[in-house]
Image (cartoon, rainbow, N blue to C red; front, side, top):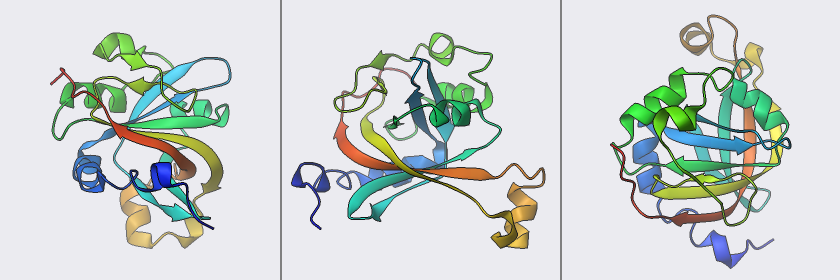
Length: 178
């Protein structure tokens, strides 16, 4: 099964930029079916192909407000800052909960309509992935290597993986935040 040329040729074009920034953080933004929008910093994720579709796999802990929003959403966006920028914004989005904080008001980040999904993008980010949720899978704690479990899951708060088909990817104007 062939992938659509429209995004097949572009979703990996900036893979090096994405992989360089990911450990420093990228934003996962989601809009649920009530219109509520939240963003969170993630530093784990994958870009690849499954079922003949280019996909982004996002890992979100069950305890996160973003998990609750994702359960009521059809899609999400991955917003990648230009390398080593938006540090304060990434820190706030990764340490404050959307349950208690309007992260967009607190950071000054600007939401902009996306091109193909209902979830908006973050205008200040340089690279955008628009993703339609096609699958979810829980981690199986019994199958996690003990040393990894000890380091990352002492409190048993594992992740659920959200598989998002990349339906569009593109670069946008470089951000003005630092």
